[in-house]
Image 1 (cartoon, helix red, strand yellow):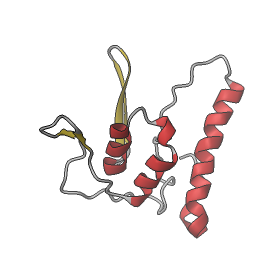
Image 2 (tube, rainbow, N blue to C red; image 1 turned 180 degrees about the vertical axis):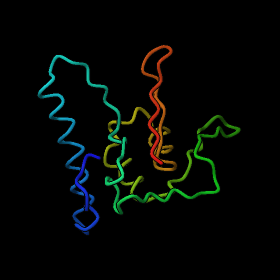
Image 3 (cartoon, helix red, strand yellow; image 1 turned 30 degrees about the horizontal axis):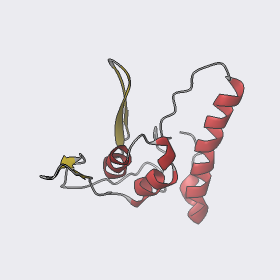
Length: 126
């Protein structure tokens, strides 16, 4: 968790509190470890208290969360399944490497990114 237990009890301030925590942790890492490489992924390693409702992230969907290709070659992005994930993807859009990565996250709460040849980081929130 990047936020305290009971964040959901903050009501309308919950989302702002969680977002500030994500930003604070990243800035502290950069401040105290300036000579270390910081892998910047969207702050999507969500803990059980980093949601609007503690321990709950509903991503129920009958549609798969992957990018399809239309006959004309354009990408068809998956739809967001959860407003919390969608808001995170919009707010922290600059940390996603593509629209498709952000859309997959907003749909399923996960992402996979190749860091270098042969090394992929998978972020799975379940």
